[in-house]
Amino acid sequence: MINKMIDVLQEMVKIHQAFNRLALVKTEALKTGDIKTLGQTIHQEEPLTQRLSQLETERQKLITENYGDGQEAVQLSEVIATVPDELKPVLQGLQEELAREVLSLKQRNELNQQLIKQSLDWVQLNINLLDPGARSTTYSRPNATAPQPNRVRSSFDSKA
Image (tube, rainbow, N blue to C red; front, side, top):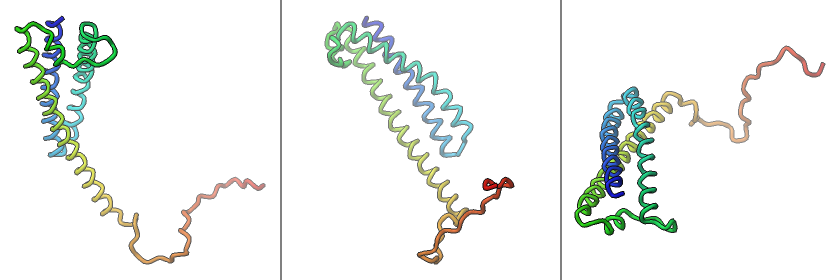
């Protein structure tokens, strides 16, 4: 069971490292406005996301079957406390490495989110500059009704 847990954690670390590499690519694509690369990168993340979900399910199953009573979640640190002393450093190292990768990915994703927001703000500003008629800043009568859009009359008279 412990060896299986180690294998699962090692693969989770590798997947998070791959996510971090892709997040760097996304950052550069966002900076340069390379939509094609951004789309390809997002497409590459899909199988990683699916595999990570499978691994997380497997990890939870291993912990629940061997350490949990189903009432409350068991933390990896609790599992580490129960394993033989020679395996503790291996599991602790994997736990720390996984935590570092997750934190790095979180920070990179927050940066990418800020870049996307800035890009959207810039696009909105340009749209507003190109279409100033959307908000008229000139004087208009306060009690005047808004002009009705031109209606297309049908050749069919419904009263007939």
